[in-house]
Image (cartoon, rainbow, N blue to C red; front, side):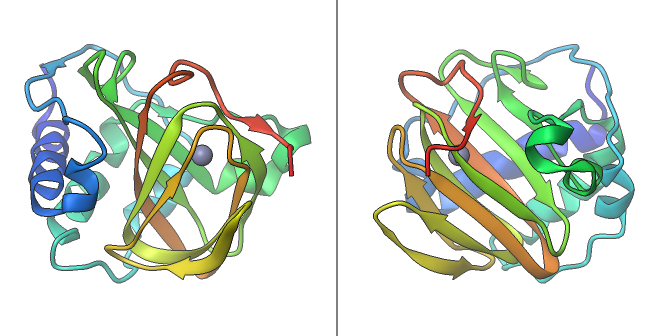
Length: 196
Ligand code: ZN
């Protein structure tokens, strides 16, 4: 059975999706996914997230608190290799699948991830076929996407990426914590670096 913090993170994500039209409009969010035994996997960034205190938004604050509480119970992943992003990036970033085929809550219709990047990191240009919605829970980052204005997004801001739209992200003075939703063709595939 999932711990209290894991269940709270799912419950607060459902609450946030119901609060924010840009999230609910992305597609039906699976509110009845069953808890899965995905295990616990740590990355170095967990210790950074435990000290996370970047500003949030009234809508996102409960989820931010739940994610921080869940950090030591999550199955963290890092998609990239050291040759692609460098050791410092790998040591200060991480994400986990909250809802999805390999998520803490199993669903085939919804893919929801929590992603963390510490201050001063550049997430290089990359691409994937799945459509994507970034929603900033706390902190801020500069979002770049081909064909779109570059924007610094803060708590409660979102950014949609169409299929195969190259994009990049850079954090500034502080870290950023995001909720990321995927949908459509290619949702089972990992992002690929490059394609600027
Ligand atoms: Zn992406």
